[in-house]
Length: 449
Image (tube, rainbow, N blue to C red):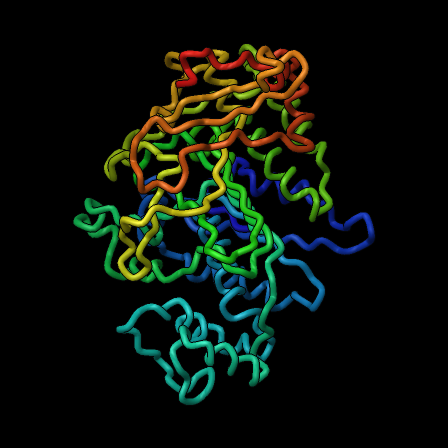
């Protein structure tokens, strides 16, 4: 587990505390927690570290080394992270997919192998040691590179990652570039090394889950949305939640929103990891006590406070509204956005977005009603079967339909995410909101055109 943002505490921290040390059938569940890039120091220091990617290579190597030192055939690998820690987790998964799990013998060559692999797309790359980890080595982009690693007993290939679970992956370590930071010398040419980390979904990843912040506007915090390559059978779910970066990933005093995204992630992982699912319910009880001790009104489900994140030095890099369903592929060598829309991203909108909008929840910093700019080009649709137009006996179909006319985008419908397991238990603590979630009034006829 890699936490790449200030933890007070983050959802990565809280999830690590909820995982039981042993599964129901007696299998040990080992948790490795790494604080990661940008978790300490002043705000300026955290910005500089995040912009340059300082420390990311050592974080990736440390996390990957832990796996290599502890993995045994039959073990299952789970990678979790928030923010830049999510980028790190995805990079580690890329390494496992590319070169497998190094043996003890192979770990002695990790630094050289790491540089070979992360620069495999760089035509200008010249290895520091051409004869390590073996003489006359080809580019790591050549399949013979990994085959030779295995033949020499340096790695075990075809090791799968059971699941990657991340909150709001920050792509600023590789893309996009922030021009003003380059001019100021904060982002340097050396920062481009981060562009060679493979954060795409590889065939060896069985499940991938990402919680995304709908209302984050800082340009430096642009999300890295996954897509499923053709022929990939990974179970992929990416869900948009209300709030900014730390609302979804955790770290704010008001845990109302981060509890919702934590419950969602726990529900995704529950089929694979034994957890204390009541943990998030206790966290919600703690948050309710926090409201009362501060003489604040207890906020309904999904109504938690989230701040305006575009403040102070963060505004230097500029801002941008997030665009669900409309992200484009990044060109690895340049780190620039291409004109190819991402395909098969499996994006959903969480029901907490709908309740906060329709039940007139508060906007950012509690100013005005909640009207997420990111959904300005999408229309909420609630439909019941024709034989039950008022929804007296059936469940509604809830989705967001595109208003825009762009033809290049990969989807024009964003389904509402279903609620799973412990999510339902968390919602049940607020019966009034629960009633609306399950029995919303249908869209008006004029909304259906």
